[in-house]
Length: 101
Image (cartoon, rainbow, N blue to C red; front, side, top):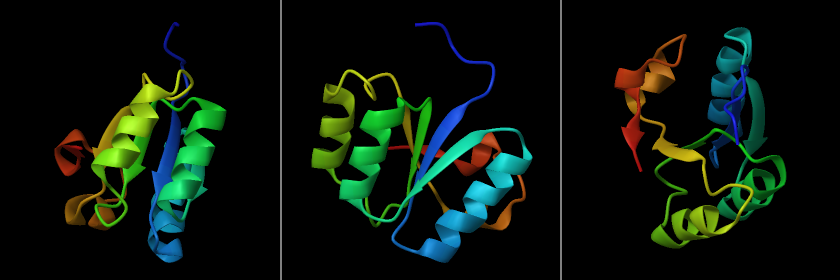
């Protein structure tokens, strides 16, 4: 499957404020963003939209969730990354603010 010119990103955090803030920043940078507020919601959204990237709040990350995301054909190619404190403070999505899940 070819890469899209506009990235599709799922932002998952139990903190609605954090997820919405990060999503707004990513949208300003031109990304298509879906927000989820639970691990189950993240799985549901990611397997529906086939994101390029899943940004997970470390509080929601579990080995089971990552395994399920990689096992589903719609979300299998998504890069799974952790939101960290640097990303929370930055207006953009710098690579240095992300750590692989």
